[in-house]
Amino acid sequence: MSWLGRITPGARYRTGLLWTGLLLWLWSAYRFAGYLYENNQPVAFQIDSVEIKRLDSLERIYDSIQKPRIYPFNPDYISDYRAYVLGIDAAALKRIRAFRSRGGRFKSKRHFKEISGISDSLYEKLKPYIKITYRNFETNKPSAPNYASSKPPIRKKDINTATAEDLKKVYGIGEVLSKRIVRYRKKIGGFTIKEQLKDIYALSPEAYEALWQHFEIKNPAPVKFTINLNKADMQELQKNPYIDFDLAEKIVEHRSLKGKFKSLEDLKQIEGFPRDKYERIVLYLRLN
Image 1: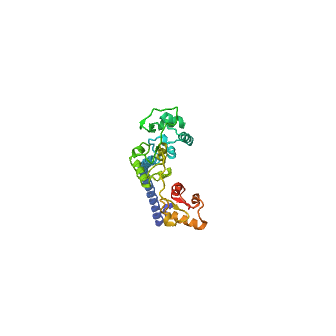
Image 2 (image 1 turned 180 degrees about the vertical axis):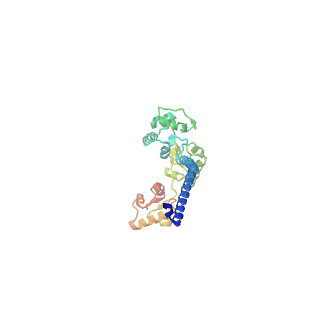
Image 3 (image 1 turned 90 degrees about the vertical axis):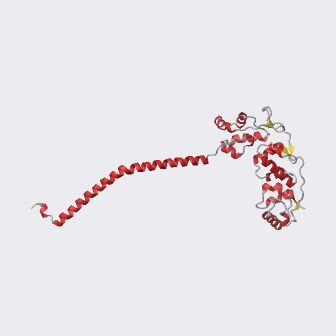
C-alpha cells in the first residue's frame, strides 16, 4: 500500500484545506501588491506635490509679511528703527547722527552716501527711495546745494507766534499737525518749555527734532498757577495736568513717610515717577 493509502480521510481533508488557504493567501498578496504598485504610488506622489506647492505658497506669503518693505525716506530725519529696516549698520548710523548733530543737512543722494559711508550695493538698493528736501526755510523754495557749509543759515522763529502755515513748512508736519499745535498752544496759554510739544498727539520724534531746527521759544509763556508740593492734598495736586490720582497718592505717601520735599528733584525718588515728564510736571509746582 502506498503512503497515500495510509493517510486517513480526515488528514487528507485538513491537508487540502491548508493548501487551499495557502494558495488563497498568495493570490491575495499578489493582488494587493499589484494594487499598491498601480494605485498607491501615483496617489502618494500627487498628494506630496500638492502639499509641497501649498507649503511653498505659504512660505512666500510668510516671507512677504516678515520682510520689511522699503519706503521713501528723508535721511535728515531717519530714526534708529528705520535705519535697521533699511540695512544701515550701527557705524553708518553713528556717522549720520554726528553729521546731523552739527546741524548738517543732506544736499543730495550722493552726499548721503559720502557722509554715511554705506556700501555701493546698499546705496544702489536705497537710491530710488532716498528723498532729499533741502529747502530754504524763509522762501520755501529749493536751494542750490552748498557743500562748503554743512549748516544752512536759518533764522529761527518764535514758536509762540508761528502760524499754522509756518509750521507746515517743517518736514513731517502737515495740515492736521500744524493746526493741532496752534490749538494746543492757545489752550495752555503758550509754550514755556520745549518738552510741552511732546504732548501733541501724533507728533513723531523726528518731526519734534525738526521743529527746533526752525523754531525756538524766544518769549516763554508765564505759568498761570503753581501748587505747593509740601502742603497740597491729593485733590489739589491733581490740578497739575500731569498728575493723576495714582501719582498724587504716591506723592502724599512719600511726604508722610520721609517728610517735606527739599527739592523738586526729590520727586524722582518716588517709585514709578514718570521721569520723561519731569520738566512739565515741575512747571506747576513749588516748594513753599
